[in-house]
Image (cartoon, rainbow, N blue to C red; front, side, top):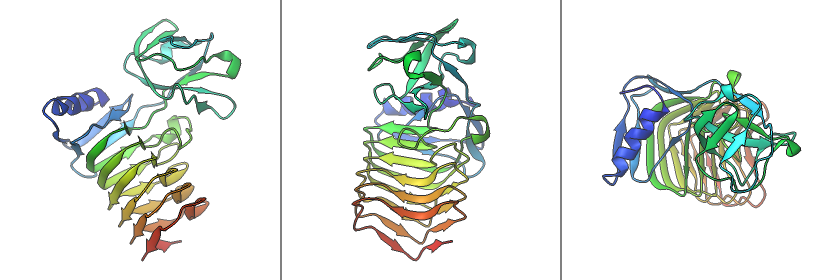
Length: 283
């Protein structure tokens, strides 16, 4: 019982102890202050459009001091914006890119302006490079995981109350080095970035999914992704509908609709070859 990311993660981890299974969500709205981390052999299945996972309002604060390699604490200017359990990204520079060494963390303790993180920093970061701690995270995420199914639910990114994030680091759904994922009847909407982004992932399949009104790309098969399949899907009201990044091969876009995207319906990147686009509407 519950209505947040903690109860969803608890259910997933319970199933992992038994080798996998189905976590079935009843109708209702869940408010997420951190990502739900998908695990191998686990299905996350809602009750249709009446099951909504919604991102909480975002918060951000500049760093107050430099945090060095292998530290687990960062000091920000306004720590009251954060609480234990929050998902955070440590971003830097004018474009607020996350540090590749410190991509996503969980706050395990917030005391004054000092945030203790769940793992050590991979490099130094601080005011010298314009560092900011931000509660920016994907609603669903996975890294180095295979054999997952997600079905019959809505993911809402609340983009009007959250900061923008580049799709190479996050999205409504974000996967990295994963394979054999299936998404069925999943709606991703209103994320301030990509709707769905998967980087260096293979055999990711979408059936009857919709990615709508996201700030950047609707579907983003990232560099090196092999054999993505989009069947009966809709990418509507994004900046770009479906974005094939560099070196994406042997993909299929079948009976899909890419409509009312502000820039490009379908984009084919460098060295992205042998991808078939069949019986689609692009308008």
